[in-house]
Length: 182
Image (cartoon, rainbow, N blue to C red; front, side):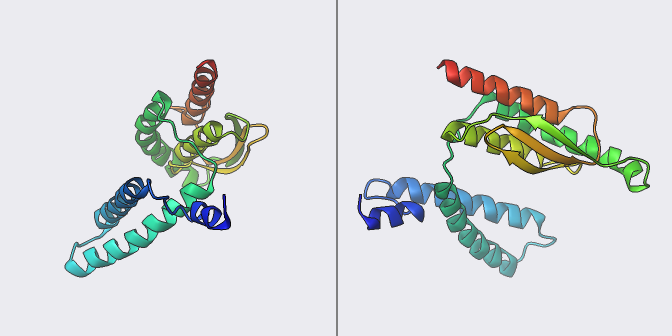
């Protein structure tokens, strides 16, 4: 493999056979970014749509470069569907629990969860999905995750039902055990 192949791989540029896949990925990132931008805009005008499309295109290229630079394998798992369905419920519950916290009645805490350890591509992908789910609510954000131990440290403002942190950790462990058996 020559230096041009290494450079091509780093920037996520496709080889001769991967052009369709690369374009498909860019289109998906671009469309998702454009829709997200327009969904959060107060008014949708032609100017806003053009800005959304331009910014989303740049973000799509950067997302592809970042995805290719990380040793990551995102195998869809049933656990991800469970986490995705729990995030909105947890976000609403956390928002309600944050009201007393804002009044100064609840302490913040640093808690830990055990996620898959190792630096393999599948484990990195599973850990990344878990971190995204854990950080997607207003009550918790992951501040550190050690791939060698699998320990994720989270800054948690509130705790309670539906216990997203416990369910994500348990789901990640089950998914990893299942993939190791295969």
